[in-house]
Image (cartoon, rainbow, N blue to C red; front, side, top):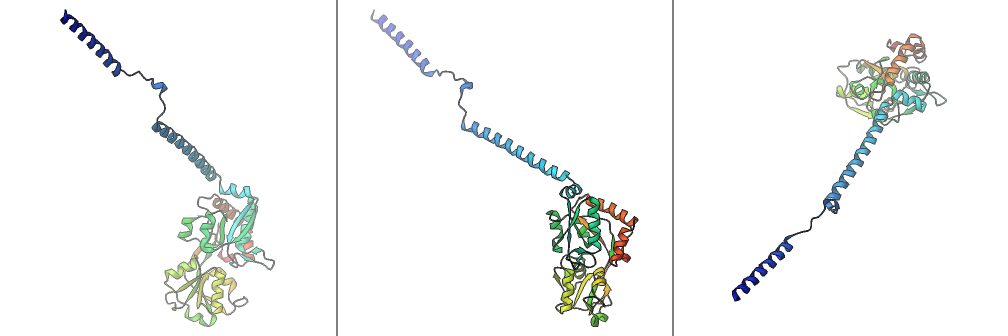
Length: 305
């Protein structure tokens, strides 16, 4: 009897232990739908939102840039009503009359071109060495100032067809002229040249000692004052500004250093260049270009359009 009681108690105890163990090992099921978002989930969501915002911002910016590039330079000039022309004081191409108005072959042609577009020409003096920067910054719309079509210029600007022939010449005092008649035997003296000009390029190519100044007019002043022995400037300017009957009667120009052509420069890719070429062709055919050239004595330099 005693053994039966002991066995019954042992069986009961085993059953109770089994139930207890089963109860401790079970865990209530948790619904994934009711789970609280983790910090990692929140970070990922934020990153997605930020990425979307950035993409939207970039899309808007790119769209604005594309819209700006889609507007032609011709439309840009017509919409604002002015053609801003970058120039320097350069007789007979661009210079001021007694009333302070800009005149000259280039200035008159620029005014006529602007009128053909239905806008007004506005002239702005620039530092010649900064002409590309002025164009790209849209402070000017073109460079129209007896500009030589060098490789540097044509690679940085959208240029018109050539319209005038030119050369770089040496300007010296009259009593020194005999020493400057041979391009291959130029005396070792100091030259004044316009910074960023074809004259400076020639001085560098010929390994001549030179000092850059702001304009070609300043280069002439340097020679007249004796602070430079000679200058290298455009032949068109030399013909108009030195010699008998000019303000520099004691100066003369001698040997030509090269042959070159003038053109007008616009922003790279600008459709204004093509519009100007059309204007050049028309004004050449109707005689208006020749009439302006004769007014300033540059008719012999004109290039047929």
